Image (cartoon, rainbow, N blue to C red; front, side, top):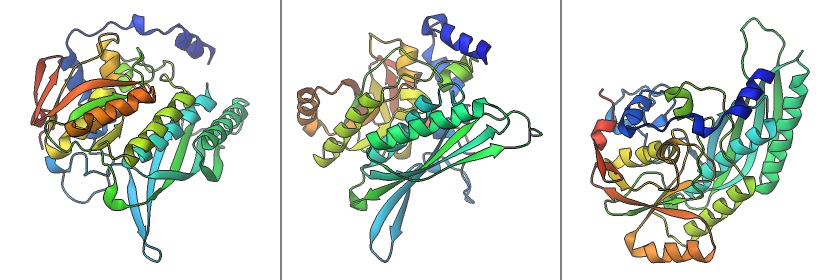
Length: 346
């Protein structure tokens, strides 16, 4: 463990060379099954796979349930995390719950409760108590910050080692309330010409990213940049934007970073995007880093002034990315082709 911790402490983004060909990075990452825009393997569908099913509609990863007796609609999602749980269980737990809440809020649903299950804790390992207590502290702190009720929390201890080493894993299920299912804000881009904004701070960070692990082959790196207080501010801003009806679509920046979040938003309606990267941030970090507290927003051009005024008045960080295209994908005035090229052949 000391060797791994030392390696993580020594890791810096400067040790990773910036790629000269972003297109090569993108097409290399496209074969990574963990990136949900092309992930066919985690779906229990009986229907055949087709390009039209990629992204699986607007409510990806969120289940909507209508309770017939009351007419109430509930949203349910499940999230798992194992990175660094054995080294920084509190921060890892706070990141997982923040991700789950951000996903709910992007849709316009209000998260209200969570249950948490901690798996693969070695019963004989003294470090198990450290993991369990840290995860508990992170769970309770995040629940308090986001005003969530904890419905259940359990630990599953591993008594046998015959299956080989399995990293500790935290699984969180979150329940949210849907006020009006007809007013949900979905992740899919809606219309060519809409403006695209990134809400949150851009930082030079690629820690624990799919890009770092899959493209560069580095599995041990620090947790992504995260501040639970900054996360709370951004999520509060998102709530207000929904109330003011200022966003057409919203997506949390997740696995694969900003580029794959853009791709997941573009694929359902066959649209593209033309964006400009932040000159003050490394391009690979900007496009593929998985730092927390960032949300991709689509805004109607007619409401752009109201959106900018809102963000500026409240001093929320945001960045103007570009606009939605009919299907072409452009980054810094360089064309990467069209959205159908980003769809794997069936």
